[in-house]
Structures are given as C-alpha cells and as structure tokens.
Length: 324
Image (cartoon, rainbow, N blue to C red; front, side, top):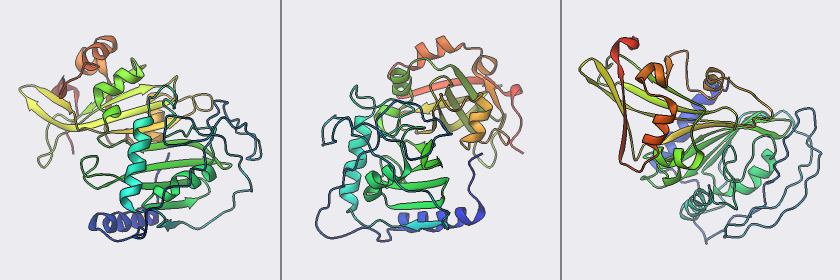
C-alpha cells in the first residue's frame, strides 16, 4: 500500500502550507524554458527482473507541437538516499504553469498517450531519472522519500485547484516508474463526462457513501475502474439526504484522483487497486454500482458520458453505515 510515513507527512504539510502562503521558491530572473529531455514513449512492457541498463530506440524530438518525445536511456544504479524536498528554482511560476497546461492539452491527442500513460510517462516503461530531468524544472517542489517513492508538486491556476498546485506521486522499482497517483485538478479532459467519453465504458463502477452527515459533511464518491487497461479514477463530492435516499452529484468542477499502473505487470481487483492508491476502502465501504443504485454499468455509461453541469446518483440510506 502506498502510504506516507509520519515524517513524510509532516514535511509535506509544512511545504504545502508554505506554497499556499506564497513562499518564494522560483527563479525571478529572465524566462527560462524547460530542457525537454524526453521520457520514453515505448509501449514495450517492463519486466521487473530486468535492470535499468536496457536500451531504447529514439522515436523523435519534442517541440511545442503534438509530437511524441524521443527515448531516454537510463544510466547508473539507484542508491539509498534520505528523504528530501528539493526546490528546483529553475523556472518562473508563470512559465511552469504554461508547460503544465501544455502537457494537459496533449493528453488524449492521437499523437500523444492514453491512460495509464500520463504526460507521456508510461508505467513499467519510463525511468524516474528521465521524468526528473523533463518535469523537474516545472515543479514547485520535488520530494524524494527513497529510491522507491517520489512526488512532484506542479503550479496551476486557482481555477484548476484552489491550493494552486497539483501532485503527481511516482512509485519506483529498479529506477523504473512502476505506477503513479495523480490529482487531475479541474481540467476539461478529466471532467466526469469527458473522462467517460475519452476512455469508454468502465469495467466496474463502485459507489461509496454514508447514511447521514457528520459535522455538516456527507462524503459521496464514484470510482471508475478499468482493470484490463491499468487505471482507476475516483470523483468525490458532497452528498445530501433526500427522503430515504442519499444523493450524490458530480459537478463540472469536480476533479479526479487517479491510480495508474501497467496491466502487463500488475493485476488488481477493485479493492486491491483502492488500497494501493490511497482510496481508503478500510475506512469507507464501497458497493458495486448496481447494488448501490439499481443501475447497470452500460446504462450508467450511456447516461453520464453526455455533456452536462451535474451528474447525480441516488442510493438507499439503509445500504450504508453511519460515519462514526
């Protein structure tokens, strides 16, 4: 299970608070564009028994157009290191936000990559060293907890995330990115209906809710699970009580938290994926869509892939536990 230890959480909270408060960590000099050292775009599954010395074949050079990046050949052997937060300070925040937006607009382009590939990074194929070189200059902060875990915080507009940054977590084995956990923010391609439109009908849909509010808040979430393709996305919202039912609506500005992995390497059940990517199934019960709402997945997909401002699901209160 991917969890942060207490030390990591404390550092994360301190740095995140600093970022929200406006602590200066970026270069205020002239405009510096990123060094676009490419990440691999190969679709060859990475076999965990291999080392990070395998070579890859170049497939092009990235420029600010919809052109795939060429390959990166990993070098060196990972060594144990102490947890660190690194402020790259190589790019002004406005420039970094430009490039974050640029990579978001490339997603789902036919010449780019599709989930579980994220910003051109494919789980089980690409190296942390290559990702660090490409995206490091754009990051507000880079946390390297060990040779097996790293996280980058990227600056975004408040309309994308009220905290003004998005997190991407990388889980690494033998220098290769094994899986990722991504906060999408309020980005057009990842709005609820657009996610369904772009990715097709999920293999499974799961609902989680409580039967009554706790301190004025009633959590409600919808999880879209694509086990054969290697990704899961959860949209959380505020529920409401309507008679004897709990109603949850996903709004246009709702954002997803996604777990991404190589289906050639890992085969997860829904609950295994939920545990792996911090969706906390132990503390909050899920039910399959049809059991929770009486709606089958095909009906759900055809109904909710349509453009709208809200997408609502109702479920009987009696199916759910109280918050406490």
